[in-house]
Image (cartoon, rainbow over all chains, first blue to last red; front, side, top):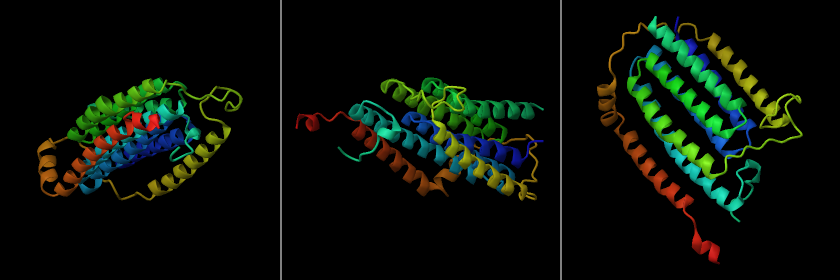
Amino acid sequence: MISLASYLVISLVLFLVGIMVMMVRKNIVAILLGIELVLNAAALNFVAYSKFVTQNLDGHIFSLFIIVVAAAEAAVGLAIVIRFFQIKETIHVDEATQLRN
Amino acid sequence: MFLHLLFLLSALLTLAGAAMVLITRNIMHSCIYLLASLIGVAGLYATLGADFVAVTQIMVYVGGIVILMLFAVMLTGGKDFVSKAQHLLGLAPTMGNRWTYTVGGLVALVFLFTNIHLLRRLGGMGQVKNDGAFAPTVDQIGNLLLTEHVLAFEISSVLLLGALVGAALIARPRHERSEK
């Protein structure tokens, strides 16, 4: 039976995998991929609670705003990554040690 | 029955895609597996009756963010960093080293046990059955966005404008700086 707990477990595993991706990988773009996974896990929780507990659409609205903020974050983050690559010629995260040269 | 099938397929796609993002070496393949995972999350939204959120997920994530990620990967060379000396247990070449896997695994275990403990207490919540009878949500979401949540709606438009201008400003090549 599909219950609230099944969605929460999926969201939990998605969140954990996102955290693992953020901690394990050394490529900045891959770290941004992990952030997207974590944001998706949070948004999935909002919609699941909205369906099973509160029974109104506020969770949907919040999930939409999470998607909007994720889009903005991806745009700015990737711009920073490309600028970083132009300066340092690499996107290894351990090379990011200065705020300005 | 159809609902169960869609739920199982979407959950499988989501979790398998996320796992492949974690264990693939190639960053380009990672992006493609992230695409699969995001489509799976959109399917999960569909099983929850959130039609508008599911379509928005596909349009914004699959059509926008992942394409942006692929552009960033291609512009930055698409190299991943395999440290040749430090493979996990000496078995498979991985993209982290032993310490990152240890710390990541420990944090993941702490989260897992805390959340399972919390999920056990869930008990009475969520007794509403998902009967599969869904009403369209688009008109209600439109009403809510322009009445109750209008402030957040306007703030998000300002945020998007700021992000657009900021991204253009950051990524622009600075010739005057290099001439100094």
